[in-house]
Image (tube, rainbow, N blue to C red; front, side):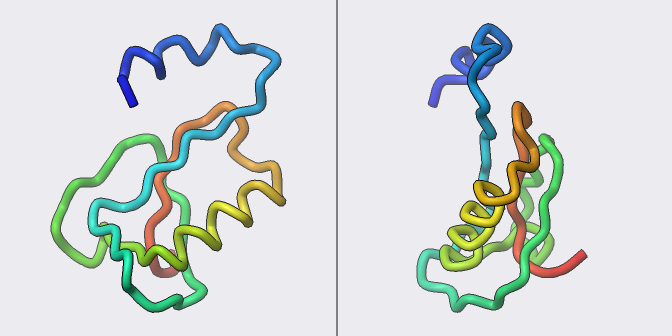
Length: 83
C-alpha cells in the first residue's frame, strides 16, 4: 500500500477504518498462543521477541478488533504476547 493513501484517510469521514500492521517478525507457520497486544502507530522493526506474532494470533487479533469496534480511525500494530 502506498503511504500517500494513508495521508488521504481523514477525507473518508464516514468510513470506520482501522489499519492493522503485523509485528516485524510475522510467522506464517507459528502456533497460536492466544496472546497478543496492541501497540501504537509506530512500527517496531527489530528482530527480537518484542516484534513477533504468529499468523494465527494475528488473525485472532483482527477478528477481536472487528468485534470490539475499538481503534476506529487509527493505525495500530498487533504484537504477540501479553503486555
